[in-house]
Image 1: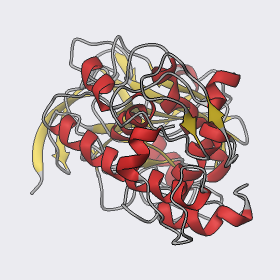
Image 2: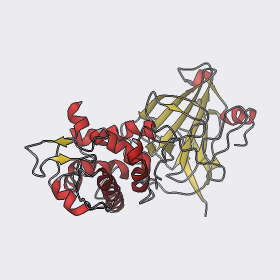
Image 3: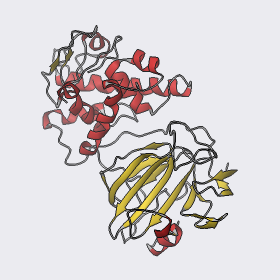
Length: 370
């Protein structure tokens, strides 16, 4: 449900049931290099995400499909897959769902999108023009969810830019839908614990079921490989090789913060998460680790590694397609500026310096022009 009307709440049926600048950059290996950056500063501005389209086999009940598509076309950052995943979490597509919570000042959460009465009075309406204005009217509620989520995304974006909130704008918007804007502002972001903390991650878990892979139009070669960044969005910085007595095990692709990162080939996410002491802001030369990192396992025991992202778009165990959007460029971890540190490993996992190979050479052999 939406707790955005004020006091918030602590339930959902699902949760209760369960030009270019020259910059000095230090890569994760500790190598100091000077290269032509495509742009960007050291502040990790949240990327301007686009909404996710539905996959052809998305399990949206047919009677609600057109309304999900309408709700997912109201603003750029909320797509139909985001709407569908959130409804799945809120009510499992039950238009008559009710969650009783005596402790909530907002009252019961009602209908397919789990609106409380006060929030419905602000965002509801007879949007399907059938003479009925009710959170139990599924068509009304699906469109009301879309309008509210678009407003929450705009609210979160403004507060992140004003440095009143920290975090991903979609996660902040989802948390606001669950517990209200006041609880998110009081926490300075997604609450650190509890159901409101869990809610954004549970929506994201369902996105894979509903969302079509975002390939961003990157070309995939005949061998099934593609570049991890779209041509024209990056410049090649420090390359593979020994530097200052240690191996720089990959290549630095220097790009603006928020530049989309794509899976170099089809495979499985081996791990995805923070490998430094913190990853919620840009790193520094004194901070060890790869920051936000993804390891992908591919056919032939090849592993590709992606470091320093500002945000991840996949989770461990997830299957990905070649060219699928997996993260956005950032400067987390041992880094002084936005770039993607990209590695290729053979006979892996585990991926280590002993089985690392030159990514540029590897990609060229795959018929690509990095």
